Length: 299
Image (cartoon, rainbow, N blue to C red; front, side):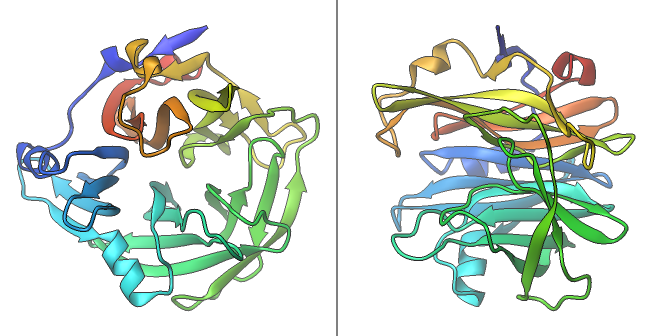
């Protein structure tokens, strides 16, 4: 069963911000959060001058001008990272946080970065390490308990990691150790998409991705999950497959990734009032934001 999301499209961006995004030929993978009357959003844009993809952070309030921070320029200038890939925003312990990875590297390991946002700026950031990590890491899903940072390491394993230090300086390594592992987890081919959304009762919602391969080409679907840390079976599927539309499954003629058929790439999830707002990319060239009731997603 497949659930299409296009019909739930809702516009939260100001006219000024929409005009700003229209300057770029390709805009995709937004991650929006609602926080204290403001919206914050990371999004990837194709810069025609440099012919590269940049990650932007926009902050705005309804009917007010937006603030722009170029995350790619910021992090490549002050750190030794070369790329800001898969930026995601989320609320953790009452504050706005973000994370990204540094994409594919030919040698060595890429990096997973966790950062906090305050007053539309980066207030601190950390490099996340785990000794048993893969060479190329994508998305970890972070949460906090008793002032300690944890991370869901993957949907397939159900591993929960715990940061080994509570007192940190900007740019420090945040070292994680295995805290717990779920049993009877069998989500082969699924990966983390969005970060975590608190559902109360120590449970979180997120949307993961299911990769399906056909003759060496890939299609990505979404699926909602409920994550309850530290339970014997911490992860449960909770929705049909999620896509933007049936037409989007056909893909587009232009592709940054030649091995991609199509994808609905889920990058943001947040609550506003009684509705859950989901932001996602379409085939790595377009984007959309929807709003729907919780019971329409976690059925």
